[in-house]
Length: 247
Image 1 (cartoon, one colour):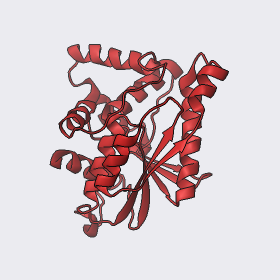
Image 2 (tube, helix red, strand yellow):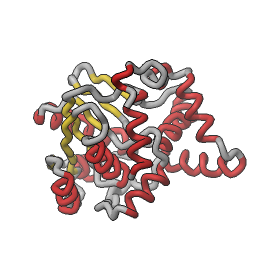
Image 3 (spheres, rainbow, N blue to C red):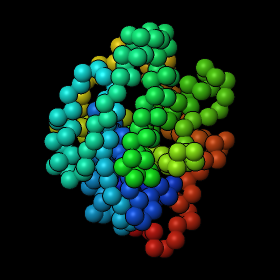
């Protein structure tokens, strides 16, 4: 717990993710990453030094998943929890029968999540993307789109009036998985028909194979992202924090 809290806290400070009085919603899918993020952000409320409130929101895709375990977790953490019912999965897989469903699903989920945020008065959305997600996304953009890019630690969605933050970017996937298991978090099995059959899984395996020869591959890619050519990844708060933020 202390190690993860330290990593998340440092990431939040480095990228100035939280300001006093922020109302933050955690996008909870039921996977390990979002549940770990929820657990850590709930714990950090007492230690971070900057006051913020927390909510949890799940977009139910219509796959028949049971969120009662997550509801119990939120009650334990004293975090309000909302499940937004949708028919996203039936629309994509049954009605449209999309051959490449991931992009449309992500777009529809984002739309439903952003709308829920506005209805609940939350200006920030915390997402559970971790260190490995960032490296994989960078490689995917390079291989499949021929461009250098990745999602940003902090993303301003001006049209929606929402700011997306990713406080787990310093946390490795294996660390998050171990924590979820040791804490017995109510992780849900992924019922998506496209699970494990995506381009991301291909890239994950590629990076895994290359890491056998180049053990520090992920660290080099992540470091390159922070040093440029991705200016949004330069840690703004690390070397220029006001003294009152040096927590």
